[in-house]
Each structure stands twice: as structure tokens, then as C-alpha cells.
Amino acid sequence: MAIGLPLSPMAAGPAAPLFNAPPVYTLNTQTGQTNNLHNMLSTGEFSLFGIIAAVIAIAIAIAYPFVMTNAHRAARWVVKTVSHEAIIAGFAALICVIVSTRADCWLCA
Image 1: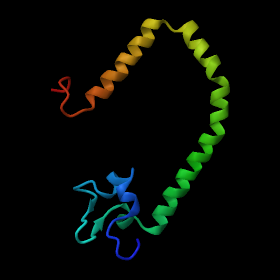
Image 2: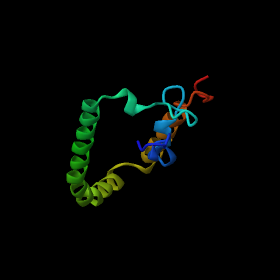
Image 3: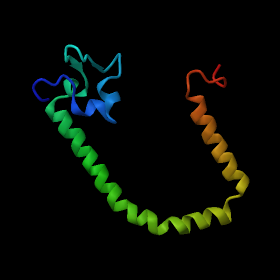
């Protein structure tokens, strides 16, 4: 953090919820006091999570070409063997699962 700047440079961008998400993560702009991930994790923990993210990124980069070369064949198989009613029901079930995870959902009451 630069001297004289109370805010992290990322706090104003897309990572703002990580820096100011009360009650767990807080950012006081008047005093410059923070309670964020960089306060809670040690350097070793940050390194560990960085290595895990790098391994996942490499795995995705390796898997992507295989997935793209076989996507057309897989889509053709689904269209030929699975009925359209089952596909529609699968999407409807997915929507029900997503909606039911909300706390104020009428399905959960």
C-alpha cells in the first residue's frame, strides 16, 4: 500500500467486495483501517492459494483444446439420444435449484 493512500488500489475496481464486505471484511476510508483477506492470511497461505490457482489455470489451459475438439461430437450425441423433454426438464430443475437457494424463496417457506 502506498504511503498516504488509505484505500487499496483494487478496492475501487472489480475486487471491491473483497475489500469492503461488512461484517467480515471492512474498509474504513477515514482512518485507513482495514480488516481484509490480506490481514487474515499469512504470506505462506497467500502463496499456497496462488500456487493452487496457477495449477488450476494450467489444467484448464490443457483441457480446453480437448473439450473444444470433442464438443461438437458430444452435442450431436445429446441431440440424437436424449429427448428434448428431458433437456427442458433438466433446465427447469436447474432453475428450481438456483431459485430455491435464495433465503426469501417462496418454495422454501
